[in-house]
Image: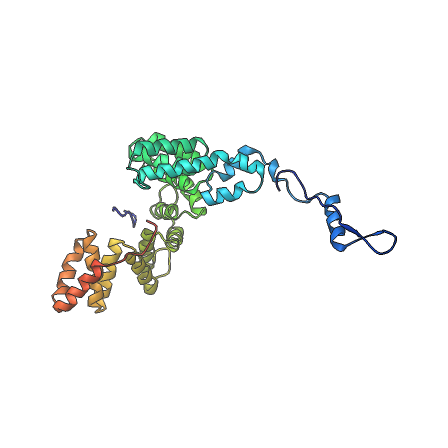
Length: 334
């Protein structure tokens, strides 16, 4: 994997209740209980609160366009009007699910990008921004960038963070490039918590693309994305701490983020963390990380690893390589 890192209510009815009465022992007069009095008050005065069913369908569908399936189902239960209004989006969710099966060859079907794209486009036509993004991805991979950007624009306008992020990245790679529009949409997606957008925004700030170069803001967004689990941002956050760029120099913080990136499969981080362990005399651990880096294509790690292996016993060498063979990379956002 190529790693681009350091600059390179309801339905209209209210509650009704009939006061319960029962005869007492004197003349057949009735005596109301506290519960019946309370119920009659509910019946005599309408419920206070908003009438959710009055929300126009076009606004409702725009709000829910980027909802995932559980949130969409929960929203559909608010009132009958919302249930009816959100039916197209629920249908889109099923189409989205079918599309993903065809795209990845899961659920007992063979991989078929044509059927996947057809399902995504049908979901997009029903107003689902998630389907718009998935259809855009297929178009982009095919080289149909104008079609992809058009779908990303629709998803971005609906407030979908992934659509905003992809639109921003598209502007960075389109011909001609549009760095200002890229930064605009990456910033919107970053505010929405999209970690990849936060990382890409940091790169733009670091390099001065579409915005004045600002190392402090770049480091802040690297760190934000790193805390959200984006492995490339972990690596860059480590470098910021190492060189004191945008962040105060901190060897401890640099080592922490470098190890986190290495443990999540970042090959350059594995190489550099292995070197750090080697310099501290942690030979066994160093060999493990250097071996992982070598397997990921970091050829410079091979020489250092071989030097260390010559200093280890055969048992230690076999153990280190066995650890590398069974290495469980921690989950991350790429």
